[in-house]
Image 1 (cartoon, helix red, strand yellow):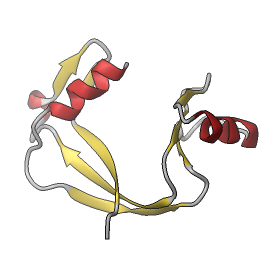
Image 2 (cartoon, rainbow, N blue to C red; image 1 turned 180 degrees about the vertical axis):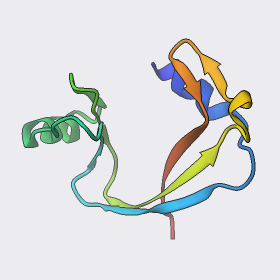
Image 3 (cartoon, rainbow, N blue to C red; image 1 turned 90 degrees about the horizontal axis):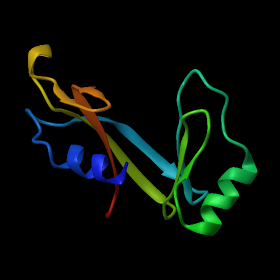
Length: 104
């Protein structure tokens, strides 16, 4: 899965990124959640923070250990039209969401 993430990260962006917002992370753990599944437990969050390693939860969620701070969230288009979507073994990609730590 790491190789797939690196490959998607290298794909060129079409146009300018679109800011979606920001998040103030206090716990040391960011949860990437599937919206129609139940959330993660406090024990899972604590375990992720302690281990410093991402945790893939059975229901599709991923917990990612990150230092506390403010993170900006942007949408980056990978294709201008549906016919230009990027294909790989897991599906088709139109865009990616990038989360970066604010340094100011």
